[in-house]
Image (cartoon, rainbow, N blue to C red):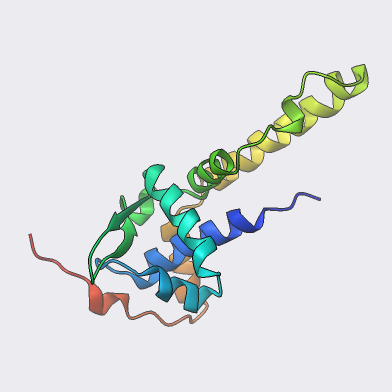
Length: 151
């Protein structure tokens, strides 16, 4: 069975938390940690990588925190997965050049195809979609009170 890493799940939950609860204001890592139950020191590493990947923007200062780097309808789950994969490093065993002929010519191509299909499906799911699901599920957010429409 395919299993997402803890880091990947934490990254998705953290970005969704920022999208759902943040409005136009920065969300502090302590708030995310409290709501999502993610250990703060572990969370900071993930958030900093997502900033470097261009998914989040970090803001310093007493009212600082993290915001989405672009609109939530423009951030896909596939983008987050790719960013976390890059952060996790390591080689993909599917891409390893050694192995049996059956493995190299039958099993690995099948696995590559499955990976491509899964990423395509994840690319079709945006943070906006997940925020809508959270709202439909009745998860309260007061982000609308944190919106700033000044230009």
